[in-house]
Image 1 (tube, rainbow, N blue to C red):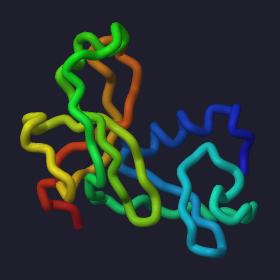
Image 2 (image 1 turned 45 degrees about the horizontal axis):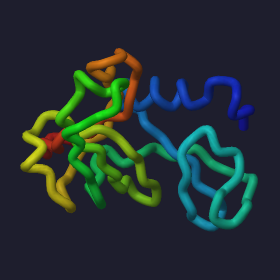
Image 3 (image 1 turned 45 degrees about the vertical axis):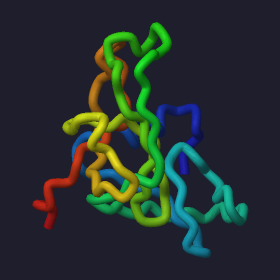
Image 4 (image 1 turned 90 degrees about the vertical axis):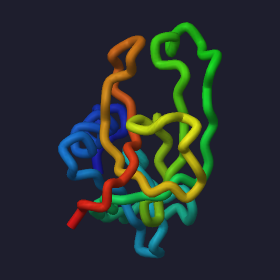
Length: 132
């Protein structure tokens, strides 16, 4: 495993953007996303890199209509937490009207720039069902 300060989160984002997302699993089956080096559930340090499922499901969300200045051009937008197997990711939902987002909506995860700052962010798009 590498040091969390060495850009491992950027490597994770690159992989997710390329359709090769992953997470780490401990010997007890708990999942976590980089840059963690220790399982937050049991303390196991022996983590294995596992491919992230192609499709996840929205577990909770919030629609933001009045953003901070760092997100002015993004609003309105939906921030959601989606589960992908044993891990949960937080991201912005795009590709559907904010009023159409619901708990249980199947989504695919990727990485896209924010409208306001061009910084990369995890993005969820409604799953079109074409994954193999």
